[in-house]
Amino acid sequence: MDFSLTEDQQMMVNTAEQIAEKFGPEYWREKDEAEEYPADFLEEIGNQGFFGLPAPEQFGGLNLGLTEVAVVMEALCRGGGGGGPALGYLFGLLGNLSIQHHGNEQQKAHYLPDMAAGKKMCAFALSEPDAGTNSLNIKTFARKEGSNYIINGGKWFITNIQNCHALLLVARTEKPGESKSRAGGISLFLIDLPQEAITYTPIPKHGFNYYKSNQVFIDDLSVDESCLLGQEGKGFQSLMGTLNPERILVAAGAIGTARLALSHAVEYAKNRNVFNAAIGTHQGIQHPLAAAHAKLEAAWLSVLNAASLNDKEPGSKVSGDAANMAKYVAVEAAIEAGYHAMQTFGGSGFAREFHQERWWRELQLFRLAPLTQQMTLNYIGEHVLGLPKSY
Picture 1 (cartoon, rainbow, N blue to C red):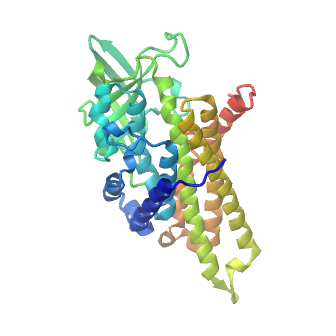
Picture 2 (picture 1 turned 30 degrees about the horizontal axis):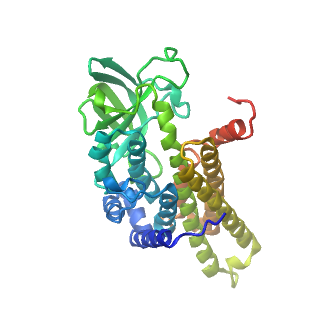
Picture 3 (picture 1 turned 135 degrees about the horizontal axis):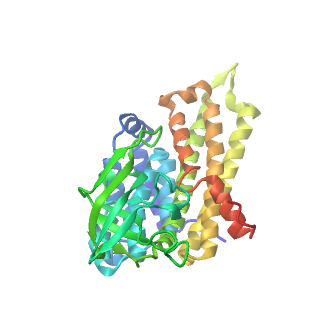
């Protein structure tokens, strides 16, 4: 299979690289240290139409596939941003994809044009204190009263709600045990922000401080039944159409971040002289960097394959399998590359001015979210290899 880029795809990558160079490592270091939202960067990629790549043309998009989004994601991260662009671009797309696939015509017309232009963003509220990987354990509940739903509950690690104009909220509309299936009774709600009944508190964290992650409290939120996204009780099935692309794009972002860290390490190894020789002349430095590069190249092919399958067979088992395997191998390769890149710098790798410590911190998130590496292996073992469920 030929994964070489088309002329149009290469033009998108070139534009993404130019933006990444404009908003380079120093920009992201300053934003991280000040815990400032990168509004000007996100405005720039919105102006270039990157948020609208997968959106239908009638709503201001380009009607392209996940492959185009993935190559842009990788280029934005590799070109100078590291992990910083990954979350901003990703969270600008998740609501777009969910509305595109499951919204009614009124919802699409109301939300998609501004989201495709990058003028509005949608936060995604799934995780709860007692429901991380086990999404079916959520307790946030939407009680039907006439033509309204009254929603109560709490969410955990909900990122960027401060800067979003809408919220994709996952809640139960049936209590556990009432539904015919374990995955039943979960619904999606698309809610305008802000709402007095929705409050939040930022969670201090050691990376990605450009975007605040929050504990969210929902107290007697009343929404009209028109806020349902898709069918009541079918929300979990709808989520899969968003979660698999999310894993592919996280994999692309991880590879882009690791390639950036590795490229800086290679330049440092060429120019850092110790005992009258560049440290890159020593196999103890050279071999780990070479191995990391080779593994990143192989993992990137896995990501492109997963994106291609998602474009051809969205929602299918084969595309879901590929998405999970791509996420696993990409993150493993990225973590290893980030480790050896930081080691190449020695003590300087611990200094903020060289950026390696920040990229290292950012890479750690990708092994935990949106799905841990261990749970990804559980999926592969059970659904790809046909082994018994292990948890």
